[in-house]
Image (cartoon, rainbow, N blue to C red; front, side, top):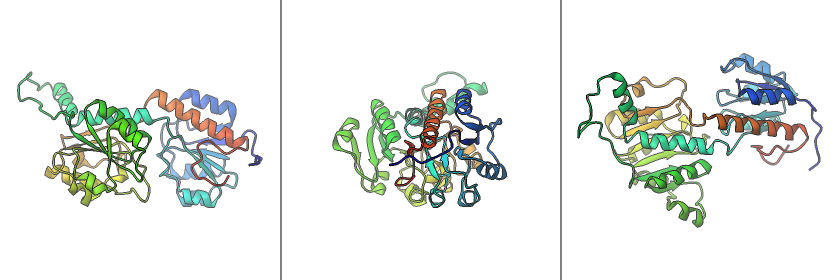
Length: 332
């Protein structure tokens, strides 16, 4: 494909404060406008940035909808997302405006899998409850019946979405003695299934009725929104722990809370929320829910690697080449 002429030093607007070395490199390479505050831009500021740049570098906290894209300046030709998920960007509207969208796949796989495994261990073993008890000053010492939880070895783990992260979780979980069940749009090669000792379930409902722990690793899109709804939550037995370090909108949060309050779920480990940073106060009152502040990818190494991918995507684009992590295929 022939190279396309683009600005040698494109104007780049960054919507959030990024690691200092990443910002320094962007400033060196591009005409970069940084956000000095580690806070999401409001809609007016986001619209102003999109009207005045060749490249926008947003994050998951920026809702880049059709209206904002329609009002963007003619010079905006690349949205280089800082992160792997792109459900906050209206891809159809970007395609209509011939705006290239890139993301940063792969760099956060191990970090997110580590966090997921931590939640898988923490909820059945009641680690958060135990930590709070010690800090409260009310712990009276060891007793045979104190802080009893459940072992995870021998339990059945159901993985929804067996991509990079799902497989990384399965690899860790197998080392903890869990048996691996998974639901995916397509079955994995037999050699991969053998690596994890994994059993494929073509029917999600059938898998949900036969597991002890459910972990979710599918992107949020129109097909997956409310995928785990009230009907499917009812398929889970009262011994099941629900783990979500993917996106809050995949789970019907009201139905999940109802099931937790009624004892129809054993507990939950949540790193993402439907309306974050707002959290349903009913969840805050439940002792069998471990909650973390969307920190599954929050490592120094992961943030640096993400920034490096963003820079690479911008440089490829500025040089007239197809960015390596272009989300929308088939056109430049």
